[in-house]
Length: 525
Image 1 (cartoon, rainbow, N blue to C red):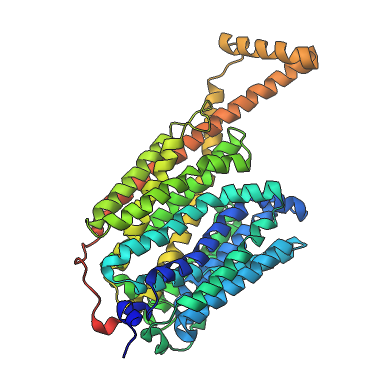
Image 2: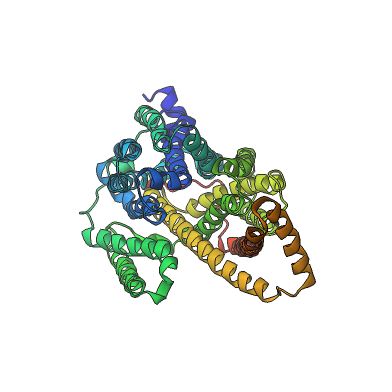
């Protein structure tokens, strides 16, 4: 006879599903946090390892490439070796690699460790998400995804703040060492509370799809290389970019054909026939663009334009995490009572409105000026992530979850990479455009210009001497021109992000409304 605990929680084999939620949220939080933390410490890594800033960016790109490659392959490994065993293995690899990242004596060693870390971290999100979704009945998935989404949304916000504090107080190496205790706790909890369902234990998988995996490596690697280095070499003006794009197209088309023709291979793309999941994949890619643009650009604005330190900028954007803390329990409660398409559309609209407010920034704002919109951004994101994940998987059977979550998370990361690259390019090119435009309207014979220059020359002359004062004046005037041009480029990026969010709010209605509280068929368990 089954135990009372097993009868109460049959989907988790007698374990309280909220313990499973905490167990799988830990590695996800650790992986997402690490992605945000490393970006803050990048200049310090470059200085410590005698590398240029350009070379140090490979610390990020090497991780992202390995991460993106493993994401869609995670389902095959989980079914072949058991999802629990594979999740524990990935957490151990990620934790060990974090130690070697922190202890790295050279750039080559840290790059190798980051590749290993990315390979271990790539599967953490899809595995955690699929375990979580299968641990709750359909009517409680919104609450479960709210708890899970809290880690996803809050981690990128806490990352810059925590990374800045660790780097300033101790060393950039502690930005990686902090993963070790979290990883050890995650291994203990997963071993104790997570169990594989029968369809995973009894799964029969075919041989590993070497061709599909190779094509996946080609197109994701080329995509990341082009996104990260394309702007430096004027995109298609460089021959290597054209060759890389050609390889990207060849690899992508080949991977699509291979995955479609061989559904028992690495990735089964036939799941895209499901309208809700197909719509969800489209929106998660756009959401990745929106959220990562904001996360990357807003702290950069405070640092580059207003002169804040990394830690101070992290503190300013920190209230976004408070908004997520407030919004996640609310969406968990509302998600089972309202049409989630309305909640999702409202979340995108709220995010778009906040982005428009960010587009009103100027040089006079203080640390508290954007407190309310930053807080509301986190609140809105909790209304986006949870309904989006729930709607996308609501019409899938349990044995489709592993394949679906791997593809779903890969598209979010790719969307984020594309969004950051587009925003970075726009900042550079729009700043150059505005610098030319502003300069065309400034004349040395203009009375206002002459008055401003004379006042600055008098001030500098008292401290540097008359001759140096005149030269310093022109330098300061040019610096002000660059600052104004950069400011307007940030305004443009924030407004374009708002338009993208509003577009997503309309695209939400491509979802079919799932039947309320309908459990998957028996054969799907």
